[in-house]
Length: 219
Image (cartoon, rainbow, N blue to C red; front, side, top):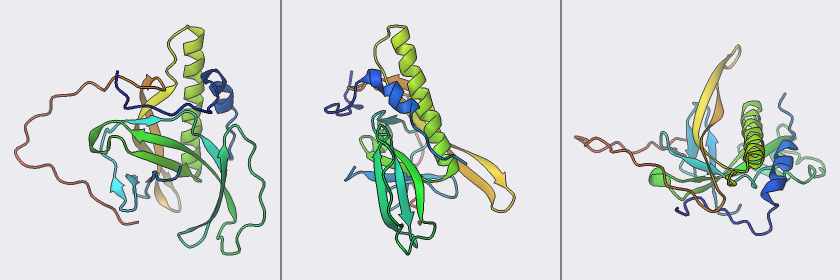
């Protein structure tokens, strides 16, 4: 048992209350020091100021107590205001949006993730999104967590409320904007809050030349 996935539990609600909180996550789908992770317009998952691409098939643990909802106001490529609260709390009250905000206040939801495999192992990141596709992906994930926690409780299984996912994508064709990519969180395993067995290592073939470095993408 390793501590690759270890989320601080002090002050958090009980795992038993997690299902109620997750199921209460309602959005309009019509932590300091962590990296920002997102899917860019070309369908690549990237993180950090340098927009480093996420490794293919890397594994990410989702902190089930980290879901938040609220509002954000964007200007010309910069955040002018943001009001986010834990999902267990009512949406924050809003005052007038900053005058420079192009679309006023937009609803936003988010969660914390942690890389547990590959060269980015140990990286803590925050994923927040205002797009319809991104919101749907988070709500789908939250619903899956709630269902799994209920199943584990019903079958009297050890508590493993942390989904381990691969960051995937899908797309659809928009009549005006062309191909639109949307995120997918592919659940591959469930682990406990205090740790999990490391994924089984696969023996890699000997490469004849060095693997290329991951690309860094312009914002």
